[in-house]
Length: 252
Image (cartoon, rainbow, N blue to C red; front, side):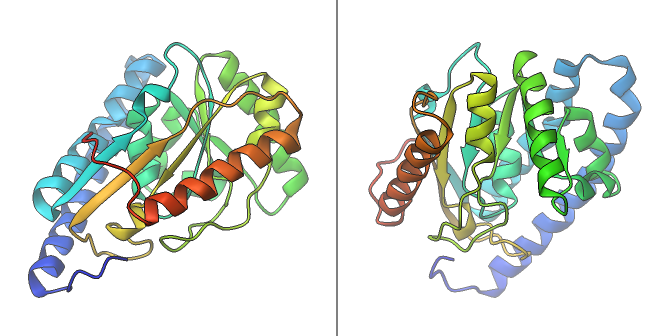
């Protein structure tokens, strides 16, 4: 988290964002579910993510959070890829849907049961897994992940599994690398510092800059372990550079 003093103004604007974020989410999710039968998957994807655009606008103009993207050109056009990103906040689960589209996110199946938000999320072909059964979860990831990639839908996975504090990376799970090698897809690694402005499990939205760094696509040339090693090395090195301010501004 940043060292910005958390005054009354920040707390009130954070509370207002939280109220608008949830109220708009409930209304838009309900409308998305009602209109879904009338739309194709691509149309549903764009419609559901209108809420994401509005939330990012609120974040900027209400809470003073700027978003900068470095390496946007590294996202291939017309090619489904496996995106592997660090997990710090709720922010990345929304914003990455605007960077790589369409996409299917790997998530725990319990999220689809959350009223309104989970119902809308289910419209976007997520890959829901049972974390309590790791063997079955991996089979589901490989089967549905390959199906999504074959359909031209990129797959987003958070290899740490759970959210980590800003500036820290957890233990990496090789599921994303296994999927990429299994499906013959490339991996696009990403690193961000969203936890500085949108802390996990907190209503606070702190003014500052969220930087998202996108790496060059990596192929599965030497097997799963080699690919995972290269992805993790890039993510850890880039995380350190990002923490030390090693990237120039590149407004989104």
